[in-house]
Image 1 (cartoon, rainbow, N blue to C red):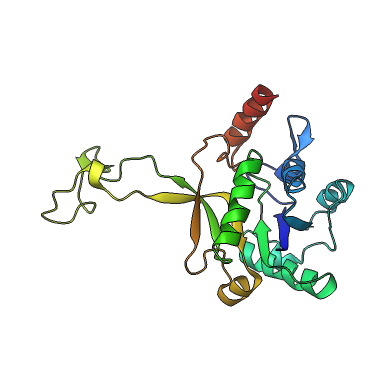
Image 2: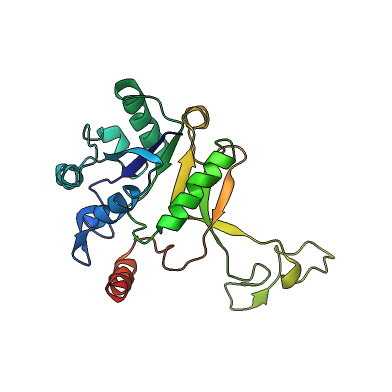
Length: 229
C-alpha cells in the first residue's frame, strides 16, 4: 500500500508569528514532523505544501518534496485542509504516481509518536481504506454546566424525566489534530477528512495531543521538549 505524507505549513500565523519555521528546542517546528514521517516505511513520499519560501527552503533541506509554493487561494485562514490535500494529490498522481491514501500531518503537533503514526496506518489498511481521524477522550463531565449567573445546571443536558447519571453517559471524543488519513477517492468525493464511516484513532496522551495554537501552548512545548531531551 502506498501512502503519501502531506505536511501543510502556511507562512502566516496570527497568534504565533512564523510558527512553522520557529525554533522549538533549537529545531524548526516543521522539522519535528518531517523527521517523524521519514521513519515510516509505509509512507512512499513526503510533500510539504507551503506558501512561504523560507519554509520551502527548510523542507527542501530536509530532503522532502516541495514542488511549488501553494496558491494564494489555498493559503488563507479559511482554506480547508481537505482542499490543500486534494491540490497536492492532483499534482502527485499526475506527476509521480497513484497512491492508496493521503496522510496529513500538521506541524503543530510536534510530539505525536511513531507508535501512534504506525497504528493509524495499520488501522487504515485493516479498515479497507476507511478514513482515520485522531481523537482524544473528552475528560469534562458532560452532565453539568455552569450558567452565566454562576449556578450549576443540568438543563439542556439531560432529557426530561431522565435518570441517567454521569457514569452512565455516553463517552465523547474530540479531534486532536494528530492524524488525518483518507483515500484519494473519498477525499475527492467528500472534500473532507471526516468521510463516511470514519474510524477514530484514540490517543489520550496529553503530551502527544499538545497543539500549538497560542504562545502558552508554545511555552508548554518548550518545557516538554527540554524535559524529554
